Image 1 (cartoon, one colour):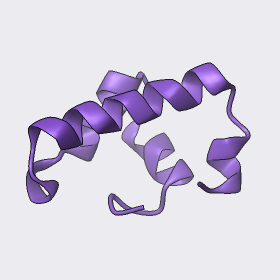
Image 2 (cartoon, one colour):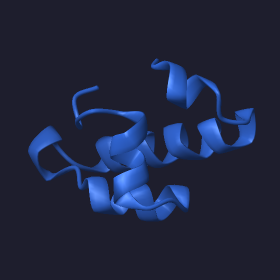
Image 3 (tube, rainbow, N blue to C red):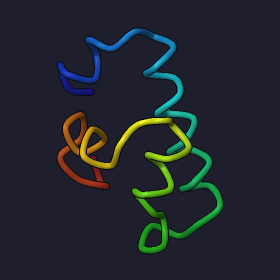
Length: 57
């Protein structure tokens, strides 16, 4: 986990992790939408990529 993400409150970190788990759990990697992950976590896609450089990370 990167430093930017680690500095978030635990509640916000968990929201992002839960959103990613849900999207990756329902879709294969190529179809796992970062737009959907961000929306489910309640953050912008830009902020998601601020915390993680790419979908693989």
